[in-house]
Length: 328
Image (cartoon, rainbow, N blue to C red):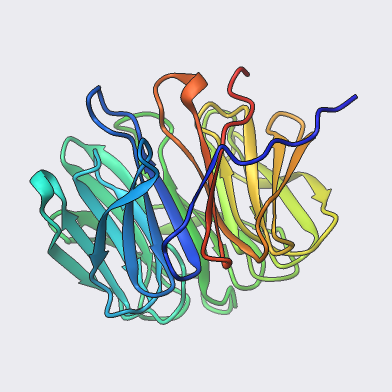
């Protein structure tokens, strides 16, 4: 007999707006307090203290335009946020500061979250949707120098990039990019060559979210349809469909594979968070708490597996925090 799904461990309230993005920073040493960053539709980034369950800091850098991506650059004192004001802000949060130290004007009107990859100590690559509708631009941070612009072949008709994932096989190996597009394709790009190595049509509708497991060379994507598409990258670096999984209800806003590659979570338009085993995509749990679309899911980076958390942000202004499958 399957156990009934749990209630949230706790719920964070106080954003006063729909929550579009979440990012944990919990890997620090004691007495470092684990924190969760959230970005909301009202343009604020909130820094949540996971011990007190309250907001420690509120950051206002996007002119009250929706924030749809937050990431950290090597620790919780250096933050990146991206908003509908077409700006990506870099923040210095050390010693109680709340200052924007630099920003990138993307000139992109979409809502494609940027992707970060650490390539050396203090050096990062950032992929983002560019000003030209179908293009992806890759910059190095903190210098902001352009690394490459990825343009689809003439006549490819991919539409806008919708989601991006930078990755590398091992530390120091060449950076690679997976991009989901408006036409339902996932494209595998080689950055040093600046060209697409493989393209796979995964969905009939725009790819809303994707995640990738570089160890298994296997990824997963979702769209507004009822289908999760699981695909793999073979040794010839071609993308191929691995399997598909039909959902009960249509619409996936976000997908996250837990860092240990054991389980994954999806954020549903049906107000639900679904948990699957990553190996065989076995449905494990349906977390039914929110009263509106779930926009984002994120797993914590706790060093101790038993402390691991899952956070979900919703249109209902709430962030639910779950402790599930921490023994496996």
